Length: 177
Image (cartoon, rainbow, N blue to C red; front, top):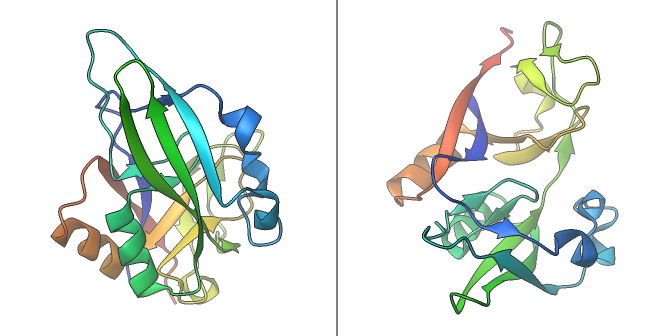
């Protein structure tokens, strides 16, 4: 089955969170440490004059967050996913948006032939071993410093059928059996 990297489409002016590191330690967005994150967190968004912020269904930087609709699709495919809630506030524009922070499994499934930069923070060319994905429809890629979200084809199709906006998919090479 095909797999994809899921990212936010950075062609739009996405929200810029200004107090994230005071509120959430992103290293705790894993199953072992998630209890260290508050169930509900308020985050401030920088308002850029003359530009309307686009609140995409998927935000990947600096923290992976999804809209309610995407969270519902995730839960349909994997009911074991827990979520923390983040409310983004743009005080100047008087806008608030609720996002869900999925606590995903970190899966070690990169196959031989994957190419990284020197410090293993960026994947130049990914090859995954489908036998090591544990059949997960969505997960964080383990063994890389930066966050990479991987989704299966069926999950990607569900997002697209529900007209999720502001996301980008990049197909990943899959190791032949």
